[in-house]
Image (cartoon, rainbow, N blue to C red; front, side, top):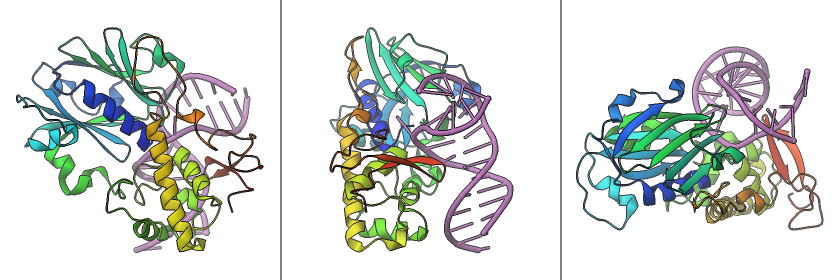
Amino acid sequence: MPELPEVETIKLGLQRKIIGLKIKNLQVLYPKGVQFDPKEVSGKKVKVIGVWRRAKMLGVDLDNVILSKTKDLDSYATLQNDNKLTLLFHLKMTGQLIFVHNSEKLIGGHPTEDMKGQMPNKSTVAVFEFSDGSSLYFNDQRRFGWIKLFETQEVKADNFKKLGKLGPEPFDSDFTWEVLKTNLMHHKLMPIKVAIMDQSVISGVGNIYASESLFEAKIDPRRKVNSLSDLEFKKLYQGIKKSLETGIKHGGSTRAHFVNVEGEKGYFLDYANVYGKEGQKCHDCSGKVEKIKQAGRGTYWCPSCQK
DNA sequence: TTAAATGTTTAAAT
DNA sequence: CATTTAAACATTTA
């Protein structure tokens, strides 16, 4: 599930909580979801030194050196990394990462009721047990998600080339509306909503934020890419950034921050303008939100203000 | 019972 | 060859 904002939120949470911890054991409950030998990271010999995100993937850098203190958690990992290991997570549609320490819980990913309950549960794929007694649970209802193990320098080389053909990160400074237009125009005849979700066009936008972005930009999701004007590409560029920012601001689709048993409040979908709002009144006009199907996926939009 | 669910890969069709 | 669509993956829930 998680799209960029959800994975970003999880990243920010884990950076605060697991950096510096040593992995005592990796327990695997669903072997297909863990594509390496768990012994390679078990036995207290590796320590978490960094957590990062690329597209919808989450990386956890491991090392066995003593670290000096740094404020910037992002650059932490890149300081010293030669021939060290990196865990790579993809949560796909229904993945969750749940960090538990004493009575505290950090949850992120696909929102379900059981994520608040006892761990592990029936959807638990793997459990990282740290030497301080805390644990990180990787749950995945539909079991599409996975964890892989790479050499850090290998996975980070050439702007994460190993991870596939990935478009620019939406918040990188070299991502401009012109870049967005150029990449989208590789799919001239595709409906704009379908094209936005291609990860080689732009990284991290999935089904929720594609609908939200087009609503922000007031563009009909069925429009062919080559029918957009430059002004509309600019509006779409802004719409993508705005909807992703809003998602991150609200902690992604899940709370994804610390809670003490109580405290479960709303999540991003409560703030969405159109996603999941079929039949409801449009936030911006007097129209009604509709749902259509595009490339096998649901698209939500307001026909009266998205032209 | 059928459809759909926040993703990606691969095969098939155009 | 390039582009686009559909199926597949596995499970739960409406």
